[in-house]
Image (cartoon, rainbow, N blue to C red; front, top):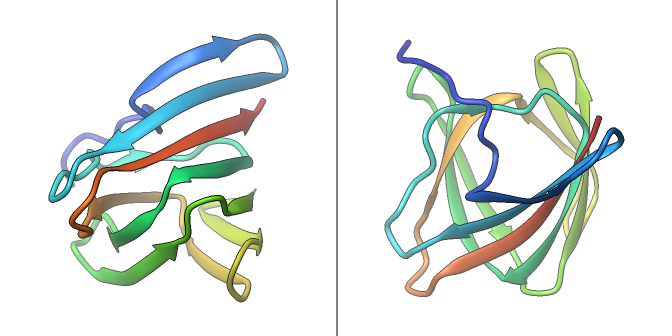
Length: 115
């Protein structure tokens, strides 16, 4: 496996001892580096879209539909993340993954990590 980043967004816009707030933007066809979420977090989709996810071994994790205006609550449990609220059913996925914007429009979210 190549290196894994702890950068879970495009840019940190605020940080204190309790939270780290990221602005996260993916242009159409753009993908994140392989990254690991070390904290539980929530995110708000400013401009939703479809994200194709992949684990570190290259396995397809499916397409995650993110509606504009949706808020997702993600709980970290060891090496897994659980979507405990959002627009769809609860689901599990690996804490280490990457995502690609497969939509025709830019994707943007605000992600808040809980330290």
